[in-house]
Image (cartoon, rainbow, N blue to C red; front, side, top):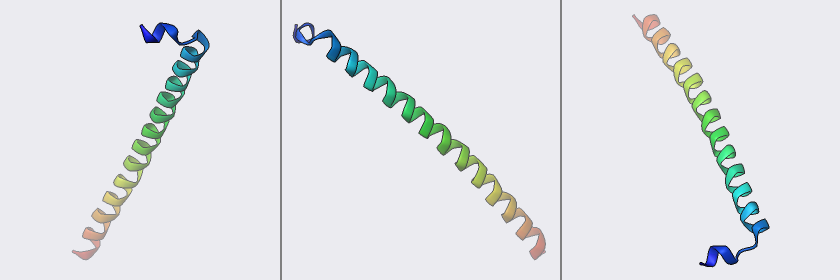
Length: 55
């Protein structure tokens, strides 16, 4: 099998890079969710205030 021909340190490097990318993506997803939630609800609150002011 070809995978067995790859030196151990290259497999380790590949696994390390995959783990780092996974952690990076999870961090970006968390930040994206946080800011989306924060600004979505602030915008919603501003819209409700504006609607009340216009009445």
